[in-house]
Image 1 (cartoon, helix red, strand yellow):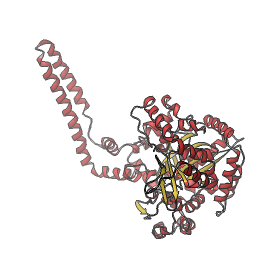
Image 2 (image 1 turned 30 degrees about the vertical axis):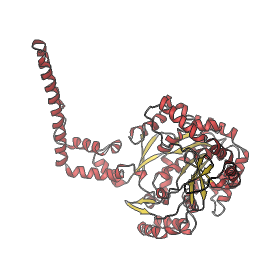
Image 3 (image 1 turned 135 degrees about the vertical axis):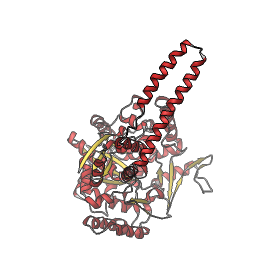
Image 4 (image 1 turned 60 degrees about the vertical axis):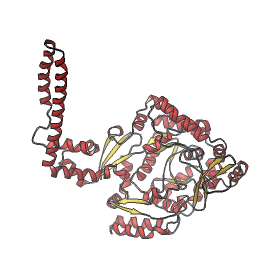
Length: 534
C-alpha cells in the first residue's frame, strides 16, 4: 500500500471559495476563526475551555452514557467518555446523515479525519485531551438522500415511505434488500465479518438511529469515537434559550442574510449562498412527521395545520417539550457548538461553504465559532489499475483532468505524427508581417483585407489541428477506449470516487486494515488530496 498527495487546489474538484479559504485569503478572514493549524486550534481550545459550561458538560456525559446503555463499550470508547467529564478535554466533531451502510466513501473519510486530528492534537499538546465525535443527523427528514448505496457499480435502494425524523424509522423493511446485498458479498472472512455487522445492526429490528450507532461504533470503537444523537431531551434543554431567540426574533435569518451580503460585498460579488435561510429556521417534530415552523400574524403554524398556536402557548410548549423542536441545517451548527466542548468541525467543501455564512450569527449568540477543517479526500486505486496507469505512462495528477483533456493529452503523447501545427502559425506570422509592411506603401483600404485574411488563415490552422487530433483519436480508438474505461472506474460518472462508491468493496479486500491504512496516511491539516494504492 502506497500513498501519494496532491494539493486540493490542483485537483480541479474544489470550489474557488474553499481554495481561497485554505489559502487564507484576506477577504475571507472576517468569516471564520482562522484557518486550520495547530496554533489556531490550540487558541480555540483555550477559548472554548474558558466558556464551556460545567453543567452542560455533565449533561453531555450523562446523555452519552444513556445513549450507549444498550451497547457494550470498548475500552477506548469508555476511556474517551470518562475523559470528556474533565474540563481539560475538548472535542473535534464531524457530522453526517445516517446513510444506509454509511453511503459514499467520504462518510468514512470524515470520521477518520476527526480521529486523526485528535491524535495529532494530543501529540502536540499532551496536557490536554481531545475526543472525536460523530454527530448523527437523526432529525433529518429526507429519506431519499440516505436510502441508497453503490456497491461495485450496483445500486441498492431502500424503498421506505416513512416520514418524519429519519432516526426513528424502523429498519425491519430493510431485510430483503440487505439479504440481496449479503449474497453479493461472497464467503470470504471479511465478507462474513461484514454480514455479521449487518445482522447486529440493521437486522436487529430497531430504528435507524440505533442501527447506525451500532454499525459505525463497530467500525471505529477501537479508535475511541463517540457517537452522539442530538435528538435528546436533556441536551435540548440547554438549547432552549437559543430556540426562544429564534422563535421570537428570527435571529438566524437576519444574521445569515447580512453575512451573505457582506460576502458579496467584501469577497466576491458573484458569491452564491450554499444555504439560504428561511424566515424561521426551526421544525416541529411529531410521530412520523417533521413540520417546518411558520410564523404568521396569529402566532405559529405549519403546512396542513388549520389553527395557529399563539406566541405564549408556543413558548410554553418549548419549555415543556424542547426535544420536539428541531433546528434547521443553519441552526444545527449552533446547537452542536452549545452542547459540545468543540474546537473544530470536520466537513466537506459544501459544508464549510455554509459554515462561512454563520460567523456573525455565532458572534451575536456569544458562542465560539469553531475552526473549520476540510475533511481528507482520497482516490483509492487497485494494484491492477496502478499497473494500467504506469502502462499508459500517466502521472497521477493527469487522472484529475476532465475526460476530453486527458484523452487529448494521451493522443498527443502516443501519436506517431506531430499534432502541433504551431510551426505553420509561425510561418504565417512572418508572411503577414510582410503584408502588413505593404500597408504603409499603398492605400489604407488594404489594411482591412490583410487583417481579415490573417484571422481567416489562423482560424483555419486551428480547425485543421482539431481535425487532425480528431482523426488520430479514431486511429488510436483502442487506446482511447481503454483510457476512458480506466478513468470511468476511478471517477465514476465523472465524479470523485468517494462521492459514489461505498466502503464495503474495499473492506472486503482489506478488512479493518483498510481503516488503519486511511488513519496512517490521512493528515487533516495538510490541505492535500490523497491518492492511495490499495
